[in-house]
Length: 276
Image (cartoon, rainbow, N blue to C red; front, side):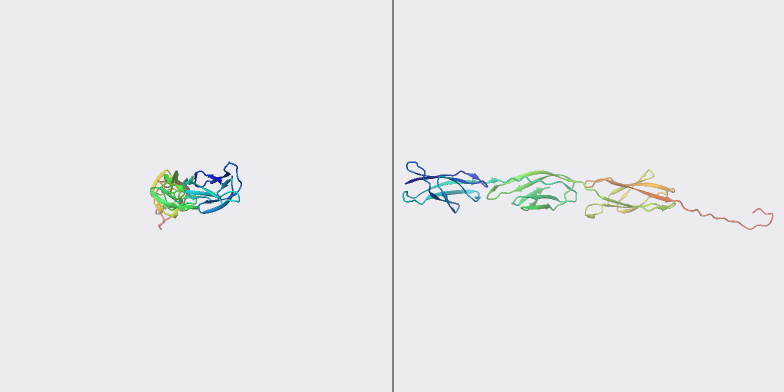
C-alpha cells in the first residue's frame, strides 16, 4: 500500500491554484510516480511529490480536487480528495471622468470587461464594457457627485465608486454689426448672441456709447435714440453672463459722417433806387 495525500488552499477569484501532492510507502519513503489530478471536470497527469499549478482560472465556487495513483507492480492504487473554495473578488473600479463644458457630454472610458451603471443627478446611465461611453444628457453648470455602480456577478462582489465632476460655463458667440451713418441719422446696432448648438440667447445686453448705456434684448436690431454729432465713436456691447454662460463683450468703432448743408439764396427784382 501507499500513502497518498494532497493540500490545496482557499483562494480568491483570479488567483492561481496550487495543488501539492504527496506519495510515499508505508515507511515514509517518497515514491516518484505519475498521478492523475481531477478538478472542475478537467483531468491532468502530474508527477507525485510536486506542486501543480492549475492552468485555468476557476470561477468562484466550492470545489473537490481528487488525486489518484493507478498502482504499479509494487504498489496498490489509492486516491485522496480535498475540498477548497474560490471566493468572490472585489472588482477594482478606479475609473476617472474629466470635467466638461456646458453643452458637451460627459465621457467615461470603461476599461473593465463588465457593464456598469453611472448615477448622476439622480438618474442612471449604462456604461458599456470595454467602451468609451458618452453620458447623453446636457447638465447645467455646477458640481456633481457621480457614482459608478457594479452590481456584482458570479465572480465579483458588488462595488461602488464615488467621484466629483464639474460642468463649467460655456462662452457664447457675440456678433455685432453697426454700419456707419451720416449726421442726422440714427445708429442701428444688429447684435446676435449665440449659445450651444447655435441656439439664440435672447438675453439682455448693454450697449455703451458716448458715456450712455442702453439695455436691450440680443438677436435684434437696436436703434440708439439720440442724434450724435459727427465723429467716430467707440461702441461697447456687453453680455454679463448667466448660470450657464460666461460674460463676453465686444468693442466696435462707428463713424458718424458730416453732411453737406443745403444753401438756399432768394433774391427778388427791384427798381432803381429801391432797397433790394
